[in-house]
Image: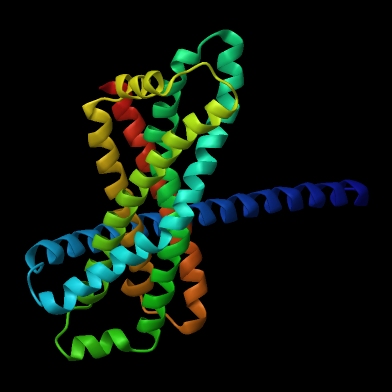
Length: 286
């Protein structure tokens, strides 16, 4: 074989080997990601079941210790964030009304203003926005606090004293986040609905307050209240489980706490979005 043909053949073989190696590496990377996802999902599921078991079986145990912790977590995930949520409710009402009033007035459909506020704010933006903001303020703090406690040996110290770390660390945070997200969602929605009419009034929309609130009442149903309550509480529960799992369930070093926080936030966002999609399907099917 001439040298030029041999060089060309070697080059073709080299490219073929490189392509084969890249495919093997890509398949191995994807396989590792899938395996890691399955293991994380299994760990989160087991952690959630353990937490629910402890919550219902030991709710009345050590009430003088655990119940004040629940009140503290409710205050941290709810009351302390109320001023920020009131401001955001005004801004949310302005954003929704500011974008929709001009379009509705152009097509003569002002009578659908209340319906739009219910669909956009009550069903979708209100609960999801409240969950993401609580995740940013409280969920990240959970990972840092629990990860630091785990790295410094506080969890092992509690176990040595026959204190269940799930009962002491996780249960108050689950209750606090579920109650906090629900309460803040209600405040955010009410503030957005009221401020929505205020911004519409400033734009000289020919809509009386009684007509606006009658539109809201006509667009709302019992299913909306039920699903809103379930969605907000589930958002809080998921955020608490994911953040506590990454901070507490795995052994960590202090330098790994930041990475655990990033993973917890990303997984919480994905879980909340997937849960929101599930509720959208329920709305469509019912």
